[in-house]
Image (tube, rainbow, N blue to C red):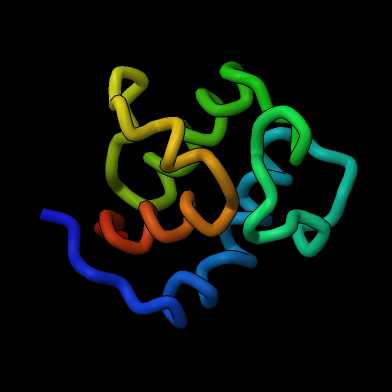
Length: 94
């Protein structure tokens, strides 16, 4: 069962998750350029479904839990860096 995570814990995880995204996708930007609340898809970072699969793979390896493609919460989970970090903070085992 996911645990409640403080906003401070999520904020502390933001740089690490941003770095993970930049490295996993070989983005030509620094992790600090990813705004915590900007959309990851479309107008924001411009990710697509293949990018999400790449991110999900590195998250499962790094944090010890699976992000499933059939999870109906994926749109919410991947809506921004902050929502992704909060999801990781609540579920990680590593």
